[in-house]
Length: 70
Image (tube, rainbow, N blue to C red; front, side, top):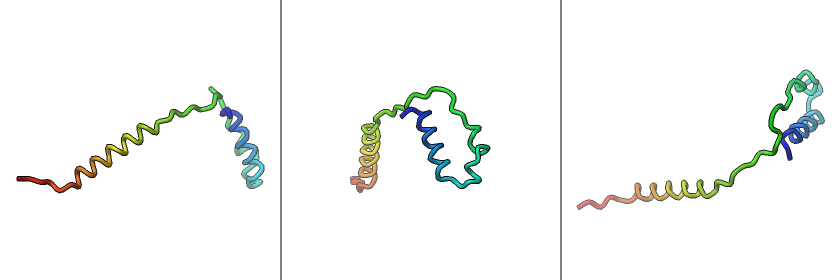
């Protein structure tokens, strides 16, 4: 869904369920969407988080291992 459509849907849903005093147009009419209305694209960065978590766990295990000194 494009950003402008999402904003319109959210606004209509808000007006349908909001308090009558808060749904007055003076509360929300000043917000106008300006700019790129294309849907937001999010990159899949799961592998980066998995690598970071794995590195952290390896560090914790290394840190908690007893030091064997001669």
